[in-house]
Length: 219
Ligand SMILES: *Cc1c(COP(=O)(O)O)cnc(C)c1O
Image (cartoon, rainbow, N blue to C red):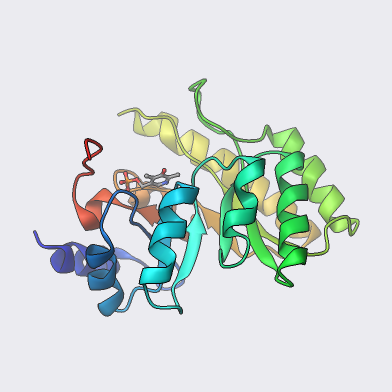
């Protein structure tokens, strides 16, 4: 299927109120422009260098989300334009984002990335760490960021029960924090598991290959 067919197919499956973040990592600016021209305004990238290269070449009303692991020393390169950083996994990082957002006279939206997968390799905060950071945020610690929600990635497995369990863990935390202060975004679900994520309460999904096709990392 073409990018256009893929995109329309996914859009047609989304209940109203579910945001689609089109994950364009490894794909050229021309492909992003094509999806933009279909009406998509929110794009996700996982690397600082890639998003800083693409940003100047594309329409300025795109909302860029960083969804990959972010090193503290690279925050300064994206602080001037990034809409949302979905991959906030430490207090050190949130402090740096707050500082750099301030320097740019901006407010940057952040999602706390919570470790829900059984796999060792996945980045993310433990649930207790996420709660602590949120408490600090509520106490007025950070002035130039807005914690708008949570992000999580499920284990890479065929086991639907396992994935569901992990998604529901994040949904529970979302509900708990949402009682303390209204949150907007529960980001979970990718090309292979977004229908299940939505069933489990996701209102934002991050979809790459199901729109743009397979990624080629050889270039
Ligand atoms: C690459 C990536 C996605 C999209 O993955 P697909 O399987 O291509 O949809 C979503 N979230 C994160 C954090 C990613 O790095």
